[in-house]
Length: 367
Image (cartoon, rainbow, N blue to C red; front, side, top):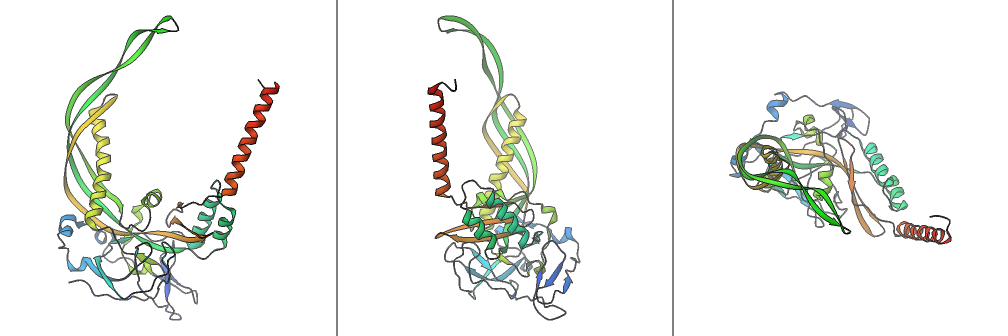
């Protein structure tokens, strides 16, 4: 049986208004009167609270009832994001693409988050990082930088991720290539010259490599381009805290739309790349050929975690642009606009410089 849907509020002890999590702190803050309340420490200890779930049990949909929850969700008609609504905060616009959305009453049964990485940066610091990033882009419109600087507040979002652990043992078949050199005589402009030519001696190799993977991180959402979210790394997962709704107070959380099975497939792709490197090192030599790798997996576990980003979805000159800021480190990624005027001016300047150099060379001023 899934846990019943409950809407949590965190009332201020001083005035009764809703509290919000204060980024980088261990307390909630009241925007109305400024009162602060500490977030209680996890009573059972971090190590126990962040325990892993058995992967195969979850894939059989047989996790214990306490591992599941019902959350109120709204799917954006523009980008398909599954946005969760907890507590008193309700969005009227999709934080991922700026499409207006109507708050629905439907619920979605999902694996409960086991851990959350609390925001370390507040909205003002994240905005400064974004504006600095925009200002450093070549050929970006000046108007967008100013618009971003004076625009509306960024949205604080918790984005869903899977982390996977596994022990692997891989049998491989390949070849080791060792370079050697021979002297050959070649004809160059009618003259015979001797040169050292590289050759490769190949020999077959078979063997085993093993590795233990810990917290292979996989984005569990399709709302943001992976090339942007991947570029937000690294994340310090050592700062993960046992999941508490206190950390979500005042922020929006996205429900996962990439399920556990698909997430595990992506994690195996990441692991396969690492194993490939292990195999090549085990083969040795100067170059390697890997013909086959057969990997056995064991001790497969996972966690569902929420990671923090600040996000802005701006419409500029009729087009939408999205910018995301790592809520822990301030690293920025986004969809960059181009200034046709700046590009045209640069092209004209390059042409003028080329013509000037050509004229000077023709006149003998430069040789």
